[in-house]
Image (cartoon, rainbow, N blue to C red):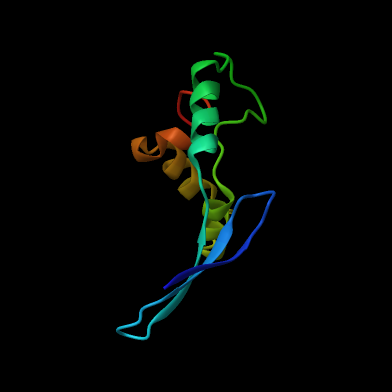
Length: 100
């Protein structure tokens, strides 16, 4: 069984209740549709200026991913964030080319 508990209209994050009728296992997850965020990131990436400067926006991540990083204690780990942003698997979260 799957049931949406609530949805934040601003962030689009939904909390979803799952119950497995066979095992009795219950799970609550945070889910978010990210297609619009990724499309906006792609547009920004293509049209990004060549110059870098202080406080240059290099990426945009969905709120559900931000919350996951916060729970894991990753938000204040600058070396880890740089590696994550520079990883080619996370390219669609970038809003400009180059290395952070």
